[in-house]
Image 1 (cartoon, rainbow, N blue to C red):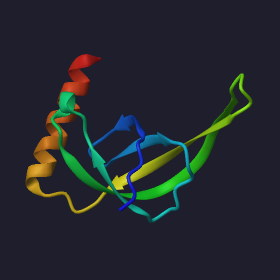
Image 2: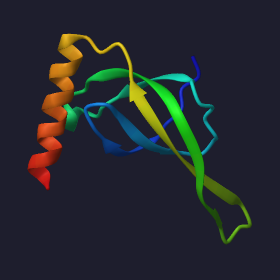
Image 3: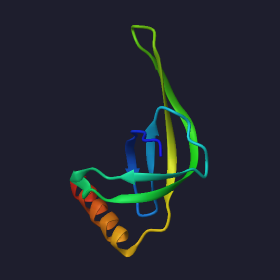
Image 4: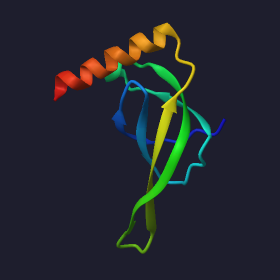
Length: 95
């Protein structure tokens, strides 16, 4: 399994929206690990769509691109569902 770091943009009971540096193909299966502040839970997601969000060029001339993808959670166990509800409660209390 190839490890890629992503930025979590949005989390819901059905899935997540992430930002990353390489395109993701629809249907790809991936693992989402929540950070300790949200309970360190792990979920399996399926890519449902990707789009190029933006590109930047650094002063050194390097180009960075940022994609956003939607993930739908699949096969959540009752324990994962509880962990997801707890993470969402933490996020809702922060708003």
